[in-house]
Length: 192
Image (cartoon, rainbow, N blue to C red; front, side, top):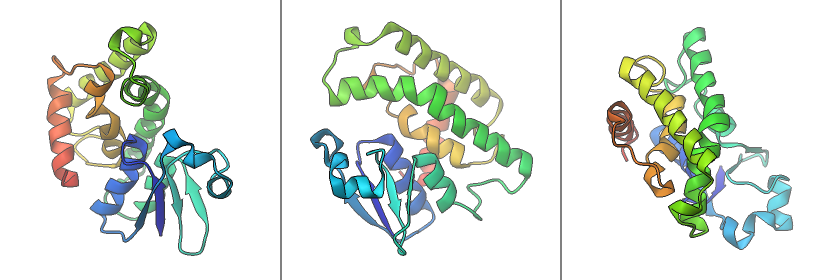
């Protein structure tokens, strides 16, 4: 299979980490989104939305959206809890990551890392919501080792991608001791 992605993107790294953790064979194809490489006619045949990552299976079928891809790759493994309720809790975190974490933590990082904006240029509301996301994670991780109780799952992989790089978007993790502990534990589980 092939993975089309940008190694600076947390959404792309999630897919790489899951493949590596599960020893899945793949070919990585770099796509530089800042050079509009995801907008070429060839790429748009893979994903009409023009976004990375994209997984291309050996039979030519493609799948987009990082959390859909990692869910597909991890089916039948211990990265998805077998118990139905815990699996649903994992999904709850995956949906929350895309709606309430990534739009703030990752977007601020994009503005600073990719576009060279300063911390002062960031939308204060995005910063406020980013810290609210970190606070919710801190609250959960004070109670449990990982996001879904004490089970390392795709929820941890998905949220690790941008949380570990939050400082690149101007977010400091001082006072988020449980989040910092969890980053270290999750990185160990992934061999990072």
